Image: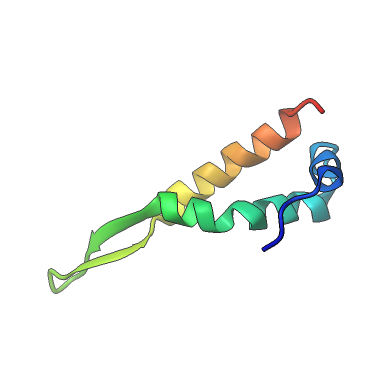
Length: 71
């Protein structure tokens, strides 16, 4: 994935939906890595997966940071 451009970040801070989605997509892999947790399934096996509650929490924090960012 290419780097985010300055223009994309500025548009996202102004509330443009397309650019905000682009910023979220850019950080999606990083957020997934932060939210990967070990889970125990019904048979007692340990599986690793993304904690979707934590992921949505971090995405929300990122959205708030984008909207409050001063360019």
